[in-house]
Image 1 (cartoon, rainbow, N blue to C red):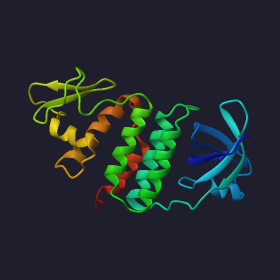
Image 2 (spheres, rainbow, N blue to C red):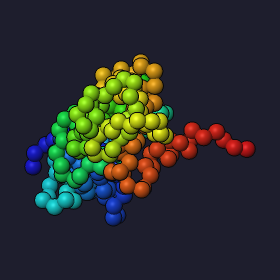
Image 3 (cartoon, rainbow, N blue to C red):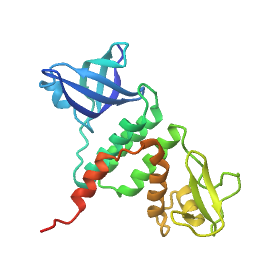
Length: 230
């Protein structure tokens, strides 16, 4: 058994006193059983806590042989908490089991303290979504169209999922302005409309891979944001 860094993405009760834990490690997304989950280890088996784990077993369902804290927990609340839960749900839904992505793990590990520090959420979320798509092989150029031509600032484009940006001759709903795409390519979030366009673009890019099932974290966030009706 080799120790490795990990974060808990999700856990739930399993059998009498155990827990079924989804982990994100440099070796990918792993699922493991934590025995005696009501003890000290169980208190650590929660999201946003840097961990060191040792796993046993050759099947897809591992056993957590050791689980130790490896740093201070990242305390997320409010919108930052929902953002963290959203990232976790994306990883559970989209990342194949036991598919190693060490660079994506490092990006995730760096995003959590940024969320805890109350940095602006939208750039952090868009950067993570983009990195996830690229790591899974679904990324595309933001400064070139699908024909290999440079994106024109005054042009209009639509996203062809898993292919890239296609120039469009006339306005249609859901299109993107070239200037917005070029600002995204440079991560220039001060450019007017860039953040809003990036959110729409990432939703369009992620949708085919999420299927028809909505994200629980997104629905929960939207429900809590709705004004209370008397």
